[in-house]
Structures are given as structure tokens and as C-alpha cells.
Image (cartoon, rainbow, N blue to C red; front, side, top):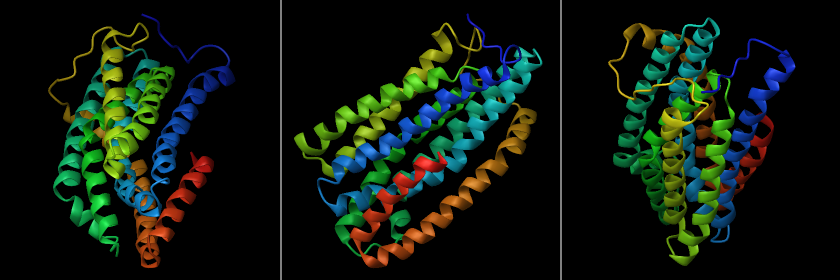
Length: 286
């Protein structure tokens, strides 16, 4: 079992070893959204507006996703750095527990309150609002998978191995790019097809991570159990580290949602333009 020791050797080299794959993951995740918009754009602005509006809530859920992800990254990296593998393992498991709970909660909200959530934007076109609600409900089903993926990816990154996340997300992107045109056009599922393709890709990435944390030769821990009684102390530390980051993300997204609420007054063309523009803009800050 190979260990990634970032405490020895060239600092610049170690930074690049971790940072470049992380940057690659961000680009892959952005390409997910571009892929949906590329194919849905062929259906018209209504389809782009539907997926883009629902996507705001997926973006909002990132604030809660950060709790588990940052908890595992910080807890694992600090404790492996001080050669305390037992504590690193415990933080990883508790971060995963937080992610599972929050992921299930997000799914419940997205599936059962999708129409009420989309109603916030006051979309005047009934078909767009309905498609957006459907998109949100379907993609929302994959929230536990996405949250679990983030927590395990944080464990690998905290241990100095960010390559696994890049390879897993690359597989997910290939699946999404392959399924999008098939489901949207061949099976004529349109906006629903894009949502199903995204959800399947997210579940596939999660499965890859679940196998990797147990079987990959470069896994951080020789043995990994997914279910363990949570540690209140570990959870407190994770929340102390992660809450500021999560709150920042939450407020940033809420401001974007309020802006979108204003844009909807000008129709679906305006919404779709804003969504495409925001994806291009994300090239800079990601």
C-alpha cells in the first residue's frame, strides 16, 4: 500500500502533485454542466433555463457538502502529518457519517419539495417551471452519492493523493457525455434525460470511490469500515473547521439565487443567457 508523504522533498513539487489533479477535477465538474447545456441548448432556451434554475439548488447544496469534504481533508491531513493514523481514520469516518446524513436530508428536500423550491424563482412559463422541478427531483436523488464522493475524495486528498478524484470524475464525465444525447434525443426524454444522465454519472463516481477506499493500492488506510458509531468530539472539530467555508458558500449562492429571481422577470431567454454566462465565468474562480 503506497503512502503519499507530503512532508518530505520539494515544497513546490508536493504542492503541484496535489493541486494539479484538484484543478483538473474542478474543470471536469464544470464540463458536466457545459455538457448538459450544450445538448439542452439544441432544444431551446426553455430547456437550458429549466436545468439552470434547478442547478441553483444543487449549487446551494455544495455548502452542506463542504462540511464532510473539508472535515475529512483537514482531519486526515493533520493527523497523518503527525503520524496519528488512528485519529485520521476516525475523522474520515465521522466526515463520511456527516455527509451521508446531509446527503439524505438534501434528497428528501429536493424530491418532496421540488415544486415549492422552484416556485421561489417565480418562473412565468409553466412548462419551464415543471421541467425545472422534475430536473431538481431527479438530480436530488443522487445527493447522497455526491456527498459520499466528496467525503471520500477529501480523505484521499488529505492523505496527499488527489489523482483518484481526477480519474473517478473523468469516468463520470465520460458516462454523462455518452448518456446525454442518448437520453435527451434518442429516447426523447429531453430535460428529464439530462437529469437522469447526470444522476447516473454521479452514482458511478460514488461507486468508484467506495471501491477505491477499500481496495485501491494507494488507499490511505489498510482497512476501512463505512459504518461506525460517530464521535461527538470529532464532529465538533469538523464543524469548527468547515462551517466558515460552508457559510461563505451558502451566502454566495443565495446572492446568486436572488439575482436569478430578478432575471426571471425577463423570460426564459434571459435565464438561459445568465446560466451560460455563469458557467463561462466559473472558469476564472474555479
